[in-house]
Image 1 (spheres, rainbow, N blue to C red):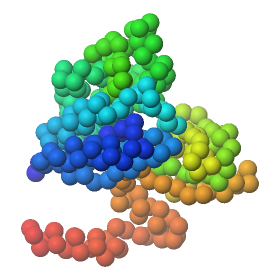
Image 2 (cartoon, rainbow, N blue to C red):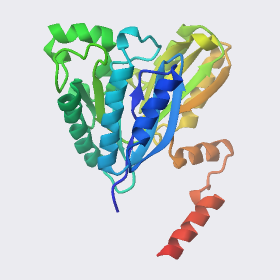
Image 3 (cartoon, rainbow, N blue to C red):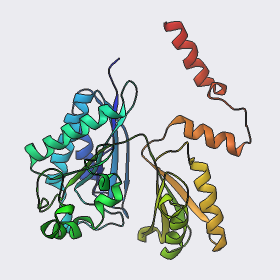
Length: 306
């Protein structure tokens, strides 16, 4: 069985549909890759395209995406509420069927060297692919963003890229390449324009402030909706499931007399996360995946194929 790799590039473009279409086409044009999902947000000014395939096609598609993003996106003219360092900002490789995290570390390093050697864009490595302990966390690598880091790399060697540089690319910044397990990117919108409420809630739930384990959270403004958002990454949904975070954000918002306006999923999530929430809200402690008709049919087909 060939190892299956997921790749989830985050682009600093969420408003120009033609550019986003072009980026998706560049990825889809590599034989052996399949587009799984695409999500864009105007306020974040960011798009996430999820694709998967065998290792070599995935790396090739990632390189094409970095190259085109550098041609289309100039960070000097980019303004959004989401932090960013690069035109293609974050490039994680994720193990799926038949693949290991170690496989993805090797792919991340291979892709990173090609990005610098072939495209001339500096690279930082993060999470399992990090070369330094202070770059395990994405937020530590990206602190200061494009505007801050392009100055900091000239004065502080500890801020310089792992590959290339030391100066950042003048328009495309740098690419943060990593290897990680599946995470869930999940945002909850609050029916208020008060950014301090979102920031306070984010501070209370994120792991770094003593909140839930494996939860990263930011409070962000959504000007186009006149609302604010608690934007989250759940890096281990079995430690802290989606429904646990939703309930706590709802409880904290109610303290301020504020309702949840809605929530959104960025990219995809594992089936088990849905099943955990379903069993929780319907109070089904003995629920199992096999209780789903389609799952039972898949099991039956796999037994027939043996």
